[in-house]
Image (cartoon, rainbow over all chains, first blue to last red):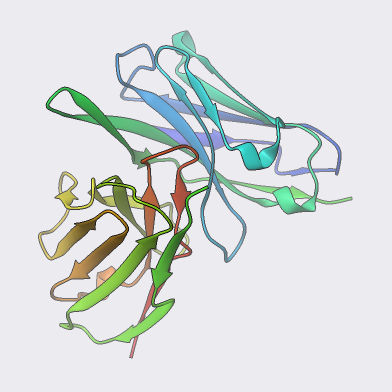
Amino acid sequence: QVTLKESGPGILQPSQTLSLTCTFSGFSLSTYGMGVGWIRQPSGKGLEWLANIWWDDDKYYNPSLKNRLTISKDTSNNQAFLKITNVDTADTATYYCARIGTHYYSGDPYWYFDFWGPGTMVTVSS
Amino acid sequence: DIVMTQSPTSMSISVGDRVTMNCKASQNVGSNVDWYQQKTGQSPKLLIYKASNRYTGVPDRFTGSGSGTDFTFTISNMQAEDLAVYYCMQSNSYPPTFGAGTKLELK
């Protein structure tokens, strides 16, 4: 059974660094083809992809956040992490982590977010 | 970035209706589009991947189609539990991008 759960500070002040943890079970980030992604959603608004990390430590970031993001993993403890530096009120959102599943079509991989955590709300306020 | 434009923004529907919504990509994304369902207060749930493939356990009243820039998502026999916001997402190229969503409401 695959489960994921996000944890974070709840509230922080502008210019601080947001540190998020995704603790998961039911899969391993050392398994070929596996990955974890981070997606956020301001209240009442749509979804924004932030970053992906893969089993081989390959990483992808949303360029709109201009080098403020760092994604990492701890395979031994089944955790993935996301840091966002220099936060402001626009970073107020629910942050989700999601497992990246891969389906192979004639050997070519196709990835999607197949399991999501419940999300953690983050408020940036002075 | 590829822009995914969903239409309509919202729909008023009745149980038993056939519901169709659309997603248009700003450039060719092949078949690399997924559809997610998000009920109020819940995290998104994968329904369709690679345009037309139903994810494990998803009822067959949910179908997806399309390729290139135009994609369609259909619920053939709307159930009350299908009330939600539906998002399309392209994964053809980084950064993956979501549409703004189509919200289904009861008439």
